[in-house]
Image 1: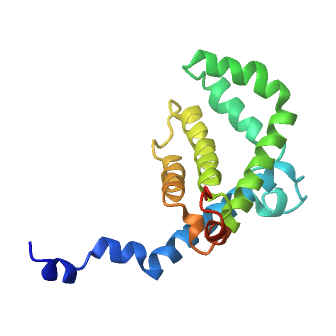
Image 2: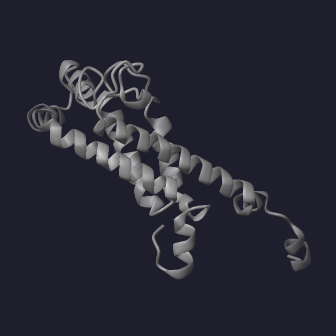
Amino acid sequence: MDTSTAATRSDPIGDVANGPWFGRAMATLRIFFGVVYLHNGLAKILPAVPNLWPDTPVGFVINATGGRSAQSILNFEVINQAHPVEPYRSLIENVVLPNFGFFGFSIGALETVVGIMLILGLLTPIAALVAAGMALHLQFATLWNDKWIYEYSVEWMPLLCLAAFRAGRWHGLDARLVRTRSRWIG
């Protein structure tokens, strides 16, 4: 093969992936998911604000406690709907729900930390994988309950892509840290 013609051929996929718009798109998607997880995490650890629609902290869709809480969602989806995987249902019924004060706060704190890490672009592959794992859990919890089968995959699929592409290397702290640490995971 003539090397002069090979050198002049362009690589449209490589041009896009190495272009500035791809990095901006990755950063935008990463920050968006960061805001979503930060928002969801704070909703689980902050008390509701009375008379604020729908009586949730700063307009969140989910509360820390009550009928719109993560606890009520798990109770409905796993216990009331009789989840078919008995060990999972038993774990939720006998361990998670009776101790939901601890689990609810822990989930909210984890979502908050993951959200902050995604916004900052810090340890992005780890943060995105943890977030994807949380969305996969919800997918598993609701899979047999007459839900739209793609309801949670629209969260975990892009998060897996953010992890694989190491999206924090575009406009994130991972970009700075990888310059000074050759083995940086982000």
